[in-house]
Length: 280
Image 1: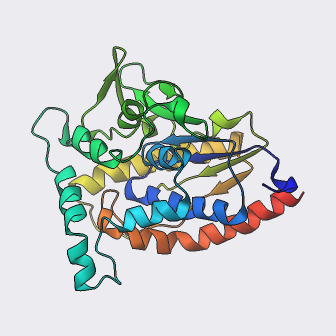
Image 2 (image 1 turned 180 degrees about the horizontal axis):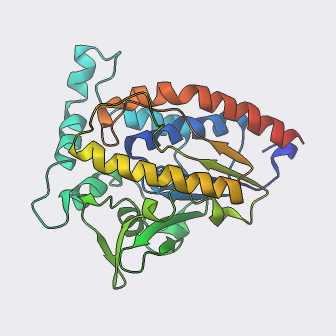
Image 3 (image 1 turned 120 degrees about the horizontal axis):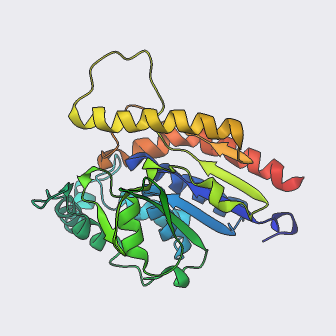
């Protein structure tokens, strides 16, 4: 790390389903700049990406991991054949859940996602991480920064109706985005605070009726948008990054390349902004 980067930089990674994979090129940008965050905070997919990064994976490795589980535009037939095991396992991970509370088995999906990670506890992470979940009954944020990592990530990502609520220490927990979708307020001990918001960009020119899942997810997007506007007015972060990602469903994990492409302009702008900020 160079002298200009001795400032403590905190990165908050927001929730947003597959759009949260836009966090990956942003972390690649940090790697390119030689910037190492002092701490991370994340909600839902942001918590998952943050945990992978804090465990030691760099941005490039995370991009390659994402692309390994989909058929990309450049894949040849032999590439697809080579990927067949990962593709089959990934599809199985998203198999329907027959139990109560959710459509997809959180145990199966998260078990596969983190099977290869040696890190099991917050204390083993290379970068301190705070993970936000929502207490279903008290409507309050629950912040995890110690203990077992996987249960906290499952709770933070328990989007209502898709994944069953998690139970930890007698509390019923759901997706952290219900109360704090971009938890940059947890980084107040840092010199530079970056908030990365991957909530869907609104498209007012579109008037078609959404489907069942899109309507539910869209309602949460509206809630996040209103709340974020209020927070930005009252207590803005040093840098606010909001990639313009539209026309991609929250759970359409076949659209990873599109997410990366659409996020690119915002990430380039972020690199310029952060570079200037670190020079001051």
